[in-house]
Length: 369
Ligand code: ATP
Image (tube, helix red, strand yellow):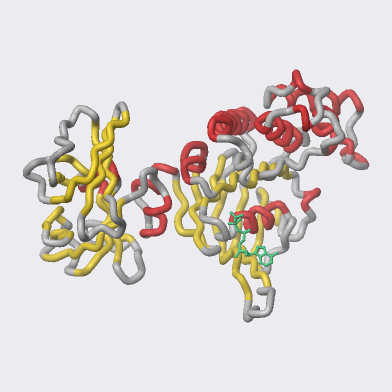
């Protein structure tokens, strides 16, 4: 099921004594979610992810704008008529019901012509349970399951009505690190097997990058960029997106372009063809640094950390926004950990320039994004 959002906006009245206006939780969203894809809605706390999801499922009514599922305008349809499955952070399983009864629950509530025979309900529940590999646990109650197993029951319950759209709101945040990794792989597998159009809300960029076909990066209610994880990582449209994606994060420097050359402090570090003279933010990915004794970018060496396959170099430069520059190089390159300075040349594709005033991307070749 394709989903289309058209100028979707949600404003809440501000509450409390200092209330002076409105909060725009979702600001003019217009984009299409292709059929069968998994979309990651990504952004920091409070950026409007849950509100966007609640609008799509019908728990909230938009202030303006429209939502289409396929060709059907569902903007004012109640949630139960939208053909969606939802999974929340806290699973919301019924503690007194068994796994099987929890999964059957949405089917037992079907009315009229949608009502299924007992046998069909049991079949559907078993198939959903098999899909998430909990069919051996059908007689247990939620209290007798691990967090990951409970989350899988919640997914089975969301899938049992064969929804056209699956909505997942921070579904992994109650799990420990190992289980998170495992469960996110499982969600991806289930999504591929069912081909159900899925929206996955998270504030964790690793999570969004690893499982999404497309990422929607949000900030303060507005969409910043939409693209495949690789596109958004390689080609962020502004400094916020560049900083939000990537671990370790991008290193940000105050720089200046003079005569089509990027300067950081006194160092002329890289050619910047087509960029006019101006002060800029220069964001350099950790993998963009090449140790080179004749390299133009001279930093004070703080520490070298060997991490198996890679080596992490912690260094400092007066132009850097933070106290430490973190660069990742291959373990085959030799760095003297006792040296006072380390010189780098920079990989052009890993150096991203942004305007100082509005933090929008400056493309090399002179065309602003
Ligand atoms: P988190 O990751 O912390 O859950 P989020 O990105 O999901 O955050 P939302 O819960 O959608 O963010 O909230 C977006 C903004 O709208 C916030 O500023 C929040 O305070 C505000 N907001 C959300 N719900 C309401 C409400 N019912 N009434 C007033 N303001 C609200």
